[in-house]
Structure formats: structure tokens, C-alpha cells
Image (cartoon, rainbow, N blue to C red; front, side):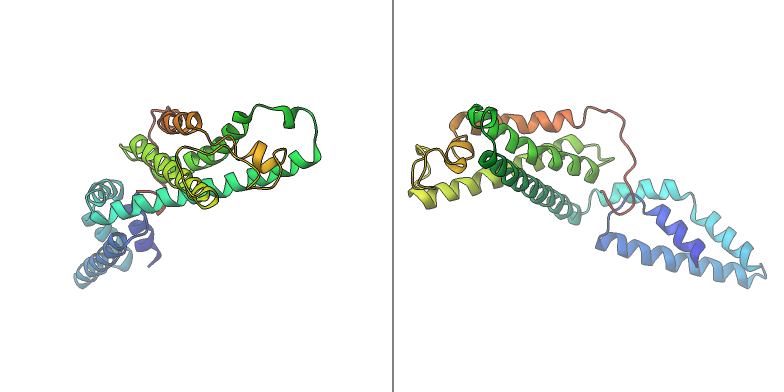
Length: 238
């Protein structure tokens, strides 16, 4: 029943893969089949029965809007939102790690501007390498949501907590304490000129914690400046 599958797909285009969506798919399929059977018993052809069933079901876009509104009230939706935020955090972490390795390689093979650059630049590069892919992912994940900006900011703040918490765990392991932030020394690599001490460890300072925290709402705001809300793609967004 390709015609029925296409209609059901349109009815549920704004709802992500979930138990709620699976339940609706089953209910719509059963209802369509029953309508076709009832019309066919009256002596109508198969094509006529299908057309009449669709007419009685109503406009797919209107049903999609109704189902979507109901989905946003489902407890399951909150878990889905959190899962998207965690996926964004993981994506940001992967990009940040790749950039960290890339910069570390450049540090070891290049002299001049890279080695002489202010320490805060490394922190800014690593923050943006995580925040930008994360924001792009969240913007797509929450497309069409009236609260998309708030959800994006919440996701970016969650990533900040995970990332900075992980860094503090490393500090606690190396130095036996978190605050005050330590003066990074030879315990890390045995050399104060190495990339890991001079380039990628010392940027983790109190100002860095403050400005990256403040940057999370700013990035969320910037990536939702476009006031036009797009309709979510099927199965990809709430």
C-alpha cells in the first residue's frame, strides 16, 4: 500500500522516530485499511475506495500539525531533546579533539607565529571547534521548534559543563585539587616549552571559564538569528 505509506509519512513528517510515532503509524495504517474496506463493500473500485479513504482522513499537513503539537506534550519528547543535546556534545568533543591533534602537529613542525601566539588563542580555537559544529547540529535537530533558541543554548551549556568538568577531572587527577587552578608545570610533559604545557593546557584559566560560559548563549543566539522557522525534516527533528 504505497499510497497509504506516502500519506502516513506526510502526516508524521514533523515527528521524530519514537514510540509515539510508531504508535501513530500503526493507528493510521489500521484506520486507512478499515476505511478502504468499508468503502469497497459498497461496490466502489479500489481506486475510488482509496480516494474516499484519504478524503475522510483529511489533509495530511493539518494532521501533521495536530500530531506535532501533541508530540511536544509527550514526556518522551524531553528524553529525545536531551539525546540530541548529548549527541551535539559528542560531536563537538570529536571536532575539538581533532583540532587539538592538528594544532599539536603544527606546533611541533612550525616555528614562528604559531609558537609565539598568545595562549588565549588556543582556547578560543578549541572552543569554536566544538561550539560551531555543535550549534549547527542543534539548529538542524530543533528545526521548526518555537523554543529552538532556548534548546540550543541549553545544549551548548550542557556541552560546556561536560567539557569543563572533564578538564577539571584531568586537573584533579594530575594535581590533586581543582581550585585554585594550578600553575601548569613539569608534571604534564616534563617541559615548559612543550605544546601540551605552553599551548593547550595553560589556556584553561578563570577568564577562559568565564568567557566560554558567556559565549554559549551568544552562539545560540547567533545561530538562530534567521527568524524564518523551517518545517522539520521527517524523523530528524521534534
